[in-house]
Each structure stands twice: as C-alpha cells, then as structure tokens.
Amino acid sequence: MKVFSLLSNVSFLLLLFIFSAVSDDPYRFFTWTVTYGPISPLGTQQQGILINGQFPGPRIDCVTNDNIIVNVINKLDEPFLITWNGIKQRKNSWQDGVLGTNCPIPPNSNYTYKFQTKDQIGTFTYFPTVGMQRAAGGFGALNVYQRPQIPVPYSTPDGDFTLLIGDWYKASHKVLKQRLDMGRSLFFPDGLLINGVQWPYFAGNAGKTYLFRVSNVGLTTSINFRIQSHLLKLVEVEGTHTLQSIYDSLDIHVGQSLTVLVTLDQQPKDYYIVASTRFARKVLTQTAVLHYAGSSAPLSGPVPPGPRNQIHWSMRQARTFRWNLTASAARPNPQGSYHYGTIFKQRSIILSNSAPVIASKQRFAVNGVSFVIPDTPLKLADKYNIANVISWDSTPINPTNGQAVLGTPVLRFNLHDFIEIVFQNTEYQMQSWHLDGYDFWVVGYGSGMWTEASRKIYNLADAVTRHTVQVYPKGWSAILVSLDNQGMWNIRSSMWARQYLGQQFYMRVWTSEKSYSNEYDIPPNALFCGKAVGMHA
Image (cartoon, rainbow, N blue to C red; front, side, top):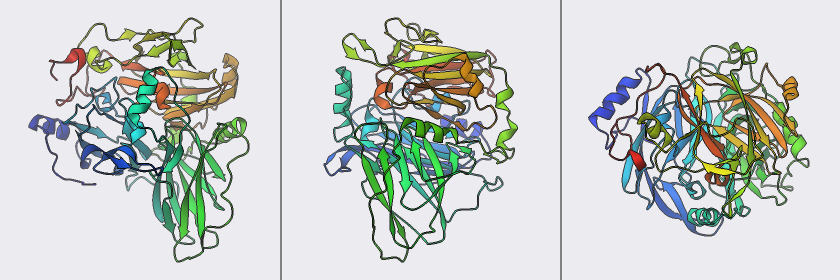
C-alpha cells in the first residue's frame, strides 16, 4: 500500500473535483495494476487475476471518512470493474463499480475511483463484477477503523487478523462463464481457501486478545467458522457494533463479514482454525493454524466438526445477533438513538427468487423477471435520457405466478422513503441478498411463506444492521431500509452465478431537487460505453 503517493493519469479537472468534494479528511492514494498470473491455490496451476501481482489483492486499511483514490490499470484481455462491497458511496453511486452504474475499464486502459468511507467503520471487501472474474481473484479486504475520538465498545486488541474465506473452482473464470452462457448450472466447488491458500498461519501471544475479521468471499456456499478450543466473542457485523455474545462457531453466508474477539487462553500450542461449507450434502473443510508464540507443541486431536444441525440451528443463531444500542458507531451518537421501529413505512415489497428456464437456458429471476445486463449502464441512460435501455418499474412488487421473462428493470423510489423488503425463498437452496448504497435492519427470519402476521415477530428494538442478508431454504427474511442515499443502486444475489444469470435489479432513489447535498454530479473522468459513447461528463 502506498499512502499519499502521486496519483498518475488524472487530469487537473479531476484533481480539482477530488479536493473540492470533501475537505479536511485524509486522502489515501493507490495505484493498482490488474494482470493475469499463475496461481495454484488448490495445488493445480491455473490462471488467476492479480492486483499488483498479489492474490488475493492488496488490503486497504483506512479510517472513517478517509478519501480513497484508487487508480486501476487494466492489463487483462477483457474489461474489468471493481465494486466496494458494503461501502455506502454516500451521494456517489457513480463510484459503485457495478455494470448498472459504470462502464467497465477497457483492456490497456485505466479508471480512477474516488470515494469516501463516510460515517462507516468495520470489515468490508472488494471484488470484480464483470462476468465471472470474481472466480479468478481480484478480490481483497477493506478495513475501516474508527477515528481516535470515537470509542469502540471493547478494549484495544493486541492484534488484528483478516481472513478472506470462500469456495473455489479449479476451472478458469472464462470456462465458468461459458458454462453459464450455455444455460448450464455450476458444479459444486472444488475446495475452500483462506486468504487464497490452503494452510495459512496466524500467531499470537498467550493471554492476549486478538481481533479476527472474517469475510465469506466465495461464489456459492455458506461457511461455518470456528477455532479449536477457543470461544468467539462477536463484536461487529458489517459496520455495526453488536451485543457481545459468545459462540463456539459462527455461520457466515456468501458476501457477509463479521468480526470476533478471541483470547488466547488455552495451553500454549498450535490449534486448528476451521472453515467448512454448510447446507450441502458434500462438506468441504479448510484449516489454518493458530500458533501460540514460543510454543513448539504441534497441532493435536481431530479437526473440530461443524454444527450437526442445519437450518433451524443457523436461524436461531442469526436471531441472537443484536444491535448494541449504547455503543457509538462511526459517529459520536449511540447506534440506538435511531428508533427505526417507530418509523412509518411508505412502501412494502416482497421479492421472490426463482430458477426458471427461459429459451431452453437456465436463468434466475426476481418476481418473474430475469435481469439482462445492458450495454449502456442504467445510471448513464437515466442521466442522459437514453431511450430503450431501462424498463421502469417492470419488476412486480409482489411475486407472480406467470412465465418468467427477460428484462432490465429499475424500481423507482423517492429519496427518504422508509421501506420494508421481504425476501421470500421458495427454493431448497440458501439465498444471500445484497443491497448497494445502504445498510438495513434485519428485523425477521422465518420458515415457510411470509404473511402480514409475520410482522408480529419482527425485532423492532435492536435488530442488527448489515448490507447482506441470508434467506433460508423455503423461508423468508425481512428488512427495513431508510432510503437516504440518492443514486442508482444494485440489489442482487451475492451468489455470483445467480446474479450473473439474472437474480438482480436496480433501485433508483431520487428527488427532483438538484443539490450536491443529495448527490454528486457525474465525475469528470467517467467512462462512456454502449449508447452513451460520444457523450461527455
């Protein structure tokens, strides 16, 4: 990482925009060169996507409200784009890095992202969003630390470890994409990785307490995380401080992150750190080593098994994740000062995932509409009034029983709407849903079909906020969202093959009042593609 280095290939106009957009907060500059390179994470050499020669990519460590400037140079033979998973991009969906808001970076070209970690703390990630590139690498960690004047509700840990855990395929991302394009489903992953390898090593001192930041960066499978003979104290979930409950193990679903404190209070030796897949007939397991400094005692005993119980055990655990009402988050005021449970809801929508076959090919859909990525980003089409790109409000707000269709839907909402979204899962596969631009209160989980009576079990007092929520097989999850961030925002399956084949759509949050207090203008270095070619910022 290079902080406060020179930013190459940026015009004077862009510099003027950057330094005038936000003042007083520090800047961190990065230059990332994206290339192919040989990697062998499962023992077989394959082509990976590297950032500055690294797999996984470089970790970004920053502080609340820092301005992050990342010049991405694409040396691949295909377009490339990065999203910053969980970073809200306040008033700035232009920097979100998904194909509905940004043109991808062409080969042998560059794009400079400029965004701020505004009013955020916590454990986040980034990854590629074009095709199936995420299956080849290009992902990494993004950790946002608190400002010195804002306390966290625990003592300063003696160390800080980041673990990127996810399923992995030996097949290349191009082969996986070709398989999906042919209308075929992905096969089961070949293995699990922890920080891009199979046997990482973490060392600490006896009696000390360490922070473990754990993210599921995989494509399709939930994982269970545990450490042999050690307890996990949950302290943060995707930027929100939680009540500090103690767990033997924790389920982490695709796209999710959490942070635990672990005290090295056992006999000095080596212990297993374990991740294993969940909710599938085949169980993949990957281990790492927790080493007590100064000890020569090796690993011993069997690898600790995961939970025997499946859906109901996991759902009960998820309900124990609670908001710490008295803790400050990124701002001085306590998290619980926002009484979300008393706010009037302007709209309620129910989103049901499905796996239809359309034109003899496997697709995935939301309320019967399977999203097709347009050549022209929706954000550009909206700004420049480009016709025949967006299908406004074409996704029904309730599930339908009709035949699934292809489309490019955008649902329109007013800035500052407060809405309820119910995710209904009628399939036997776990789902994981992500909303860009926001976090939301996860107020309920349940089995079977959601009904209005399900609201009686909502947690309207201390539900945790996060950006990605799991939906259990044949079940539902309900969230409340305050739409206080103007822009074009992607709501999608975090299970990347499902997203690629249509389980996503966009929300436009908008007001007719033109003001930089609501949304920044298009950046002067914006890329133009599709029907927007020839236009200018």
